Image (cartoon, rainbow, N blue to C red; front, side, top):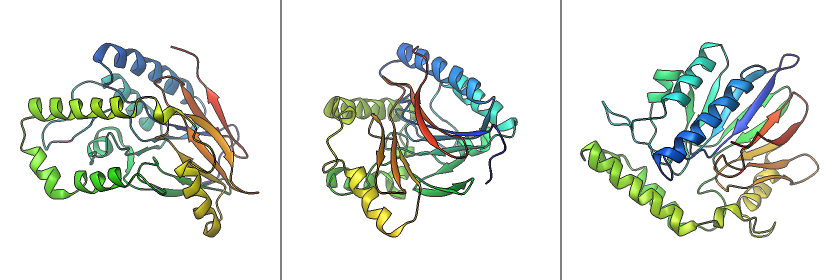
Length: 253
C-alpha cells in the first residue's frame, strides 16, 4: 500500500479497558476516543496491537457490556474508509468475529506482515514470542483450545465474565509493574526474538505491544524494534508517515 501525501499509519496498543474498575476504565476510554478522532483526520490505517480489553469473550449471543464509545468511534472510522487492524492480546485472545461484523475491523490472531510505501512491517502483540515464559505458553495453548472455549461458553455470562475478570486482575497483581521495566538488550525476550527473525527476514519495523513500555530499538542497519507502550500510564503510540516511524505521547487525560 502506497500512502497518499499527508496520510499516516497509526499504531497503538494495550488499553486494558475494564481495568481496574468501571470508573477508571471509562475515563481512559474517553481519552482514547479523543485520540482516535484526532488521528482520523490524516489516518490511512489504524493498528490496535492487542489488549484492547482486559477481558473479552464472545458468546454466541452475548459479549461483555460497555465500551460503546470506543466501538462507535471505531465504526465511524471504518465507515469513513479507513481500515482498522486489530490484534488479539493475552487478555482478549478469545475474540472471534464480533468486531469484524459490527465495526468492520480486520482481526488477527497471530503475527502479520504489511507493506506501506515500500517499508516492511512485522506486527504482533508479542505475548508468547521469544525464549522463556514457558508457563504462559502452556496456558495459552489451553485457553485457545476449542474444547476449553466450548466449556467456558457453557458458563452463564454473569458467572463466566466475573470469574474471568477475577483471574485477569490476579494476573496484573502477579506481574505488577514488571511489564513496565526494560530488562536490557540481552534479557528482553522480544528483542531476542526480533534479532533472530531479522537474520532471515528483510524487514524494516518489528512492531509489538504487551510490554507496557515505549521503545524504539535499533536491531541492525535496517531493522528496528518498536514497542508501543500502553494507554494506562503512558498514552504512547507510533506513526509511520510514509518514510519514517516515530513514537509519540498523546496529551495527558
